[in-house]
Image 1 (spheres, one colour):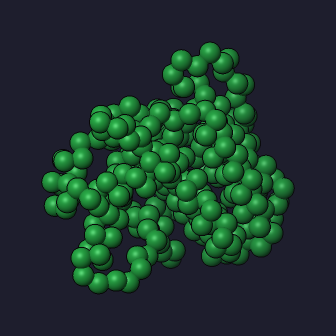
Image 2 (image 1 turned 90 degrees about the vertical axis):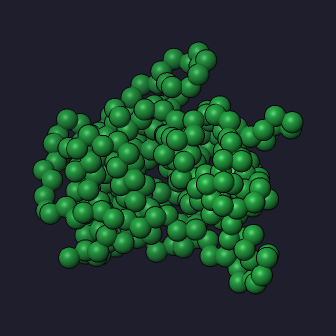
Image 3 (image 1 turned 180 degrees about the horizontal axis):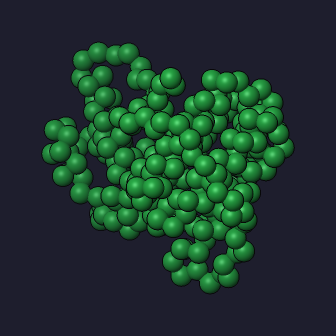
Length: 263
């Protein structure tokens, strides 16, 4: 039976060892960062929302300093804006930055998918197939939030299966940004079924060792996210781009196997 290792919360970089007040401040800043990231990717904080720094401090039971450190970090990463003498608000996702993030994912995850297809080990396939089944369960339950979590785990599993730690590390920020972008629009409300089918097709290409098919399938899958996001941009005058056809067309893949309960 395959263990659902992916179901744990996203891990954060290990903190450097320290002691005393400095270490406590570092840990507190990480806690604040984790809390804010969680709310950004779940859509609790929406673009344009103002953050109540005092409320965050009170909720975590920490001082203002580590919270502001977390906010500065998220500002550098492009998720928040600090407005002098006004406060801090959630940044509005921009089309240029969004396209850059997804193009990086298309290139890097395409490499990963091809690498995995070139050496499709039973263990790697088992985990990917399990995630496809979990995604189908979320579709059946009409649970977009659950599918979003499974979707992230699926893409992380493909990258991890490539065996490249550097590639996985570079993609970490891309995944965070992607979840933030997709949380700002009703993407999975309308695209769960199609995304689940595309995941199944990617796994099928990997299973049969079709390296270029796997690369192109994941590229088409991610390119569709760009088109969908563009349609929801505020004040956008661009004409909607034609939809990228699903590699499966209208074919229905049977979902097999027992679904593990996620943590």
